[in-house]
Amino acid sequence: MSVNKLILGDNLEILKTIESETIDLIYLDPPFFSNRNYEVIWGDEGEIRSFQDRWAGGIDHYITWLKERVEQMHRILKPTGSIFLHCDWHADAYIRVEILDKIFGYENFRNLIIWKRKNSIGQSNKKSRQFGYNIDSIYFYSKTKNNTFNTIFMESNSEYIEKFFTNKDPDGRIYRLATLTSPSPRPNLTYEYKGHKPPEKGWAISYEKMIEWDKKGKIFIPDDTNKRIQRKIYLDEIQGQLIQTLWDDINVLSPSSKERIGYPTQKPEALLERIIKCASNEGDTVLDPFVGGGTTVAVADKLNRKWIGIDQSVQAIKVTELRLDKQRDLFSAPFSVQLHKYDYDTLRNKNAFEFEAWIVQQFGGASNTRQRNDLGLDGKMPDNTPIQVKRSDNIGRNVIDNFLAAVMRNDQKLFDKNVADKKPVGYIIAFSFGRGAVEEVARLKLKNNIIIELVKVEDIVPIAKKPTVSVEINELARDAKGVREIEFVASGTSEAGIEFYSWDFAYDAEHGFKADVMLDKEGKQTTKLKAGLHNIAVKVVDNDGLESIEVIKLKVNGTVERS
Image 1: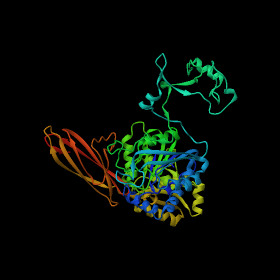
Image 2: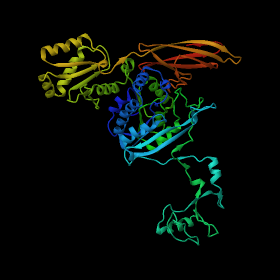
Image 3: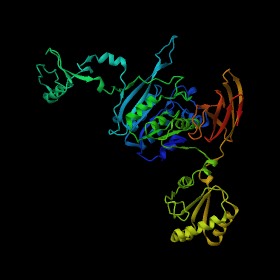
Image 4: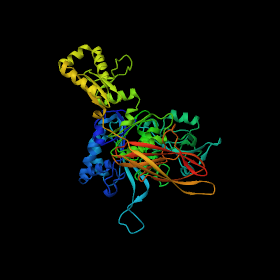
């Protein structure tokens, strides 16, 4: 499977198509086994369908539903790979014992990370019979004992520095003192140094190292021999505090956070940044099978990781696409979006060579990489039978004549064999075929026993027409400085039904659509515009995930004019 890809669909079925041992890191934040009335977030058909599957039974059904997915995740992880599973108290014990320990093995349990979310759930100032919940659990398992792991630090805060870094050298360097006592007794570490007797279990370093550190000024030797020699840790040398298993320094997103996209359970980017940095390296592949608000893939993209994101919800995939588009720059790697259906217009106008390679692969063949001196043949099936692709409609008879000649010149023996075996001598893929082509193919089969199979693109991949959108503009108010308050009302149409709208109030065609409002269910927005020219773009997304953009050019001066 290609990487840097958003995929709409059931993650179980998609996970089954991923090659074994190809993924470096998996983070999943599956729906919690909690209050079912609040679990549907996006509210589109895909999510509701998945919701019903999960809650057909009680906890046993939920664990079974999740377990079969984690089994596939274990299979696709590399031997050096790891999984981080995010859950809460409702099912965390079941998840560890019934899923993770059984699939990954107790010996490959690495950590239980506690994320302190700062705010509590289930407790108020009124009388309560329990403590409030303010933590989530994140289980960290590796596939083997040779997992990738990078030590990471969190920045030391001023309170910590003020409390511990209380000493200063004559040259002004600030340091704190740390023990030099060995955790376990060893004969070669039990020695006296400059009149100071060793601790009961000996020193933490050898005699030779003690001399070396002493010369470099890295140890503190008290005048009183009854006091202990200690190590100096300089403030300008530390990277910060080592990250432990209690993560209480990352807050949930506030309602006014710039990261907010309208997804209620959206995780902060700092949380995923820590996980991705510790368990993968640049160029590694990160998978999120419950993409949700898209935080995992957005952070992975920023950190120069490859990624795959899967979700059942059209809104989850399309909002994540908008989020990625907004953060992209000249150095960002390209990515693709795989939907249930493909837009006819987009496919018809796609780069010819890209389309040929893509549709041949979708058909089950291998594309021709030469692109020159190939007799017009664009690929071949596993048995080497040729394939030709025409990115057009109403293919005529002349295409059949030229293709037949090319097939015979390409491999006469294979051609003769296919004729004798009554198999296709070749395949032509196009959007549609004219009457002349259809009649000639029928004649060749009847008169010469030559079978050429005509394949429509829609027989290989499902095709739909993208939605349309129109925009009504209403001036609501103006102030003394000429600033206009403008209301935009978008109206989309699609056979599949409209899912949502997004808005870019400073649209630049060269840099692409950068959403200021990612998720608008009603299609109505109000903004204030100063005098001048303005480009406002609205994107409409339907229930198939197909989209259209309408760009409104406004001139605001004495009046509001639309061009």
